[in-house]
Length: 396
Image (cartoon, rainbow, N blue to C red; front, side, top):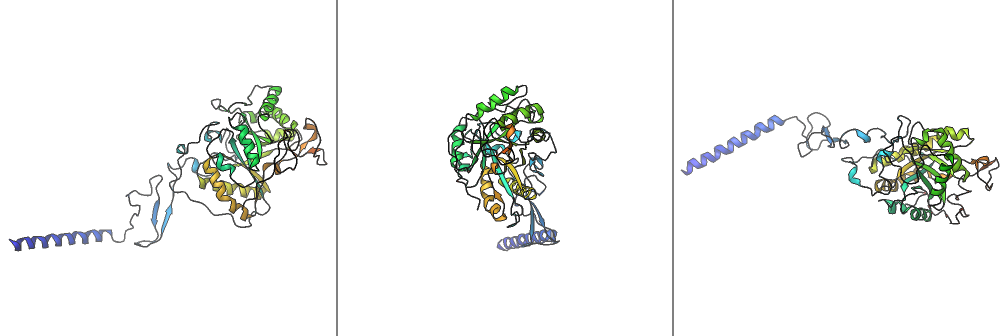
């Protein structure tokens, strides 16, 4: 009996050894998926693991290829928010939270594993100037407190209808930021509500002027204006001219956010003998830190190629974190971050509503220094009597 049990045990051991040998022979020379779960790299959001060289095993080198969740979409290429003239419409509007709403990061699918490209070379962007505008302040949204702690010369655009608009404008000025009005305007998509205080099609020149004056009256220290939404309005020459005349008459400059590739703002301004600034890059069309970092690098390179550039982001946690991460790299590259008034073109005196202080000698007034407010860094005081000291520091 005992001998039979022993023989049976030996037989089982021999069969097990034979099965193991056959299994190992069948796997010889093949690469093994190290994903752990058995999923292959073709699945969206997973890492594709490719063994380098035939027959490698154990400690072989691997190339990890990351793919965004869902595959393709807004994360491919430059993203749908880049105002490159390739498409018309409110390119950034579908991606923004409604005015005053709390930001919900769950609404955006991040990369499965985020990756960052090559850093800017030290000294490679010497002499370039970049103005970064952070839009959509005024509603007390997530990221506002973190933004106020950034020590860099930024520009913030305040929504006039936000319940915290006046307070956040004061906080921004105290932080050393330049403050501009984020003027709501009608979009091509009539289902999109630009918010209270909007300029819409069909308004008379007087109504446009009154709307701007009412919105400016809600904020202290405003030195310029840019558009919130506004793809329909900025494509209409008559509406644009009325807006620019109202803005310039206050001694303020205008930045075209370029929510439409068919915007006529620059053309109309030129016909008036004036110039405007234009957004070159939307930073956060995809709401992940590493995407935003790459967009900041892209904007920095554009600034170097052109001498200067304007880029626009939004008050979101990922945007603020990405900006903080990039400050040392931007400083090392030689690029200077500046408030947007440092790039603003002068305003022809003929377009001003009154006063000729700060004449530049060519019949022009330095934008942002007469009428409604003083530029960031002025030793003087703005038209409302509130100081605007330059307390922000260069990045680094």
